[in-house]
Length: 347
Ligand code: HEM
Ligand code: HEM
Image (cartoon, helix red, strand yellow):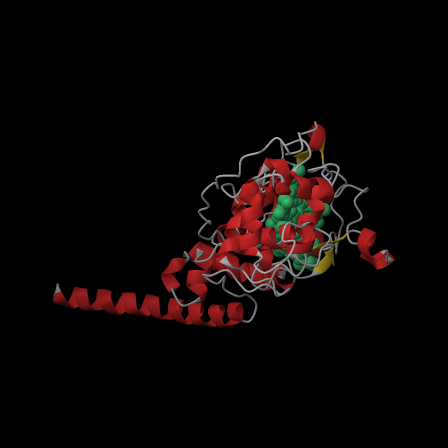
């Protein structure tokens, strides 16, 4: 009995040893490619200080449908923070029930992307926030009407003065964008299983998930999806080896070409950030793919010309599931009451 126990112990140690060695080697490789999400909101590159007052104001603005002309749409309508930061629609529905041209990317961890939008046309979140407010298919408002709306409510005037102390005219469209940006900097999802594993916990990921990570690196996915957001930091043609069909890559959306007007940028898009990807179906800028396994298969074929086996696809999907982090728990803010001066919604 005792001998059996000893040999069982020896066998366990033997089996455990190579697994640890594998973990160490894979971790070293992964550390060279990826970064962990910090526990605290990061400093913003544009020197917009992330203060408590600015975050609180930004949260109000993010949740307030009166920032849209119709009084119907807020940032939260399309970037639901309780739903992975997306709307779960193929392409977003905005002002007047119009269907927009693209799928809404998540607002979670967007602060870590090198630039915003599928084509990277906004350099940071503050520049980005001005876009949807004025976009005809999204909130269809004007900067002047937004400022008039905010100025008509004493609760907002006070909150802007607190968030931007010492300024003579704190209620401005620029400050609206800076406050929203500060709030968005708090929408980060640390402590995913992957991050726990990357920082040393071997048991945080299952063997299948680790096999998926290895495949993700060895097949070449990580050559485009890397860094802190496992993507969101470089531009590549969608269809490097073989363009997917028009049902997934519609001919009308030429991606970065519209931004740079350079022929080589036709159908070039930002590599999708893959943090929380299991929560943010449907996939791709067209939102045409609802199943993550199918999205992985499309990528393997179109970007790498790799025909992965069913089990390998499952393992990559399992790995992608470890990128789901702790979701930000955001309490719905109480919004300032309208006054008789507040512009009426126009549908
Ligand atoms: C893109 C935030 C309102 C739909 C984005 C991105 C952010 C963001 C950060 C870029 C994410 C990335 O590139 O990874 C906001 C904020 C809003 C707002 C702060 C309020 C001021 C809306 C609304 C809708 C919407 C109301 C839907 C009607 C979209 C879509 C994109 C996008 C479709 C992708 C557009 C493209 O790539 O061309 N938003 N959003 N957003 N948002 Fe919003
Ligand atoms: C998008 C996974 C390889 C560039 C995506 C998406 C997933 C994914 C799940 C959808 C993101 C979303 O909808 O939010 C993978 C996997 C790969 C791989 C598992 C390996 C098998 C690559 C490679 C490149 C690349 C090698 C660059 C050559 C892109 C681009 C997009 C994207 C540009 C955005 C496509 C669009 O415009 O809709 N990837 N990817 N990917 N990936 Fe990959």
